[in-house]
Length: 332
Image (cartoon, rainbow, N blue to C red; front, side):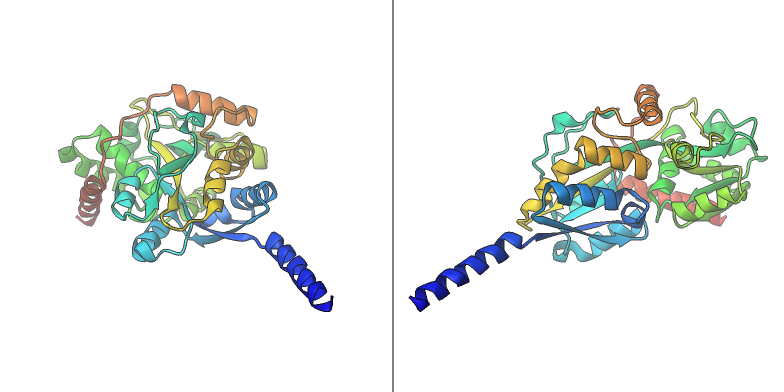
């Protein structure tokens, strides 16, 4: 009788321990997503509430460039279940690593300015690259990229395309609009009134807010932050006549990790709840058709109806060539 009671008691405690065990989910991302004030903690809280069997842990890097470098360095030894924060211009190189596998998300949920059929890299937000300015200080902002490059009265701040996804946006923009033979002169001309080129977005935008430049490279969503968080309507985004370049941030599941929480997380990432938190706190546009906030909704509609330049054929090798050209232009 005592033996039977002992076995029953042991089984009871074992079943309770098993029921309370959570499955860790490791997500590599960039620090402005995982920061206390950003979308990451809110996404984590919402996800863990809906899937209490999963314990989400962020491993953050200082920008998307550093994040991708770490992923490349780790290769097949990567400890992450999910990589969140690469963008559409890193997908070509990311595929060559052969460390990601297709997700199970229904792509019919997506509502983007472009058709998305990639089964491995899942969009979770998007925006257009734009230059931000203070309308109270700059009464005649440039109407085109050509004007911005040629107007030497404008003090410009932008980011290094080797380390910043935002900086890479300007590289794409210039080389999509100008023939390669002309691009080098564009960089030289722009350098004559560029205040500084920073490693990442935070440094450049911080310098702009301190008044060190007239325009800073960012995304067209930046004014939304000032409007919703600071109740300031003086910050504006350029909308150049030649058209703009789209930035789409993606998440991908690491292959052979056999973690069911990874599939749950990717599906949750494009839910209305997660998308609202990402749009408001990561200050980007939602990838699904779901009302979030009037200013965000209006900007998404405007972006979807605006002129988007086709960058679908740009490869990782092409980007390397353009970066080398940019470096040579600035060194002369």
